[in-house]
Length: 221
Ligand code: CTP
Ligand code: CA
Image (cartoon, rainbow, N blue to C red; front, side):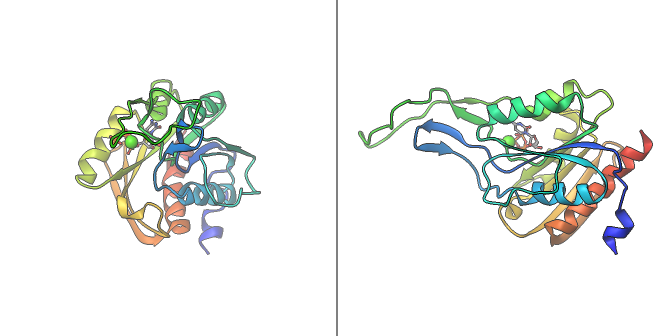
């Protein structure tokens, strides 16, 4: 029923979706990463395709099956690679959903050799990665931008701050407990000041709700 009701709402939209974690290399065998499974982004890609969007899915390392239904599927590892692949396709996109859990910091130096076990403590120097979504926000134009926010406290305050600072139309805030799990509970904050709670529900239904909100921006433009 839901599929019929929402079918074609995103008809003609060129939609860029990112998913999954990033891997920031330390040495040839080690990485810094996070608990993201990629599930939310992959569900968004699937449902958006059903709703008529032409989807490009850019995914960090994930165990999920590559979706056969999207227009284009791009696999990346590091935040630098994700930045490159997203920016490359931004001009032609009508909307972007950054569901990826992009690392905030990466090792300043990547050792070409495996680091050997030595002293009792090891200090790694990290530096900030590029904030992909902030960068897109600066060149937004008429595009619709959607971010995600994972918070452990002050969810509303932090999410709203990100909505403004990254120049977004919508931000989907979820509690950290949803990361890597099957179900999700989110609050969608929109640039018009309204918000909507969705869930707890499986990620497919959450994806429907998010894309339904997205379609309101699409119809108006
Ligand atoms: N994001 C991004 N590039 C980064 C970090 C985050 O594009 N280097 C995007 C995420 O994909 C998400 C949004 O920014 O859509 C918010 O990510 P989040 O981690 O919640 O916020 P940060 O701005 O990184 O701030 P913090 O982690 O300190 O809360
Ligand atoms: Ca972050």
